[in-house]
Amino acid sequence: MASELCKTISVARLEKHKNLFLNYRNLHHFPLELLKDEGLQYLERLYMKRNSLTSLIPALK
Picture 1 (cartoon, rainbow, N blue to C red):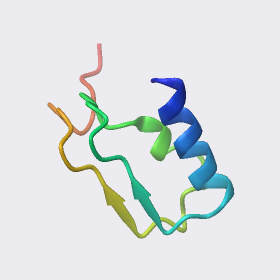
Picture 2 (picture 1 turned 60 degrees about the vertical axis):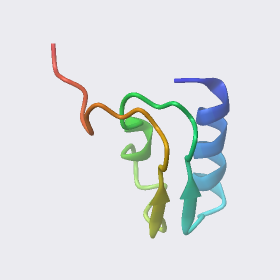
Picture 3 (picture 1 turned 180 degrees about the vertical axis):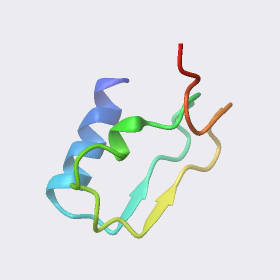
Picture 4 (picture 1 turned 180 degrees about the horizontal axis):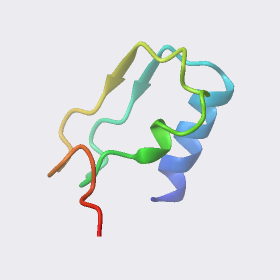
């Protein structure tokens, strides 16, 4: 995962954001970092417009 995306998710976790904007980031997979721990328990809305998601959960190998 790109460091900018890591930073965005970390800030949202620390500052207890209710909205997280991940629009226009050319993401191909759902960022699993969003599901780790309970840091994003305050998140109410996740915006992911205009990405290149092919699946929500990457295939297990």
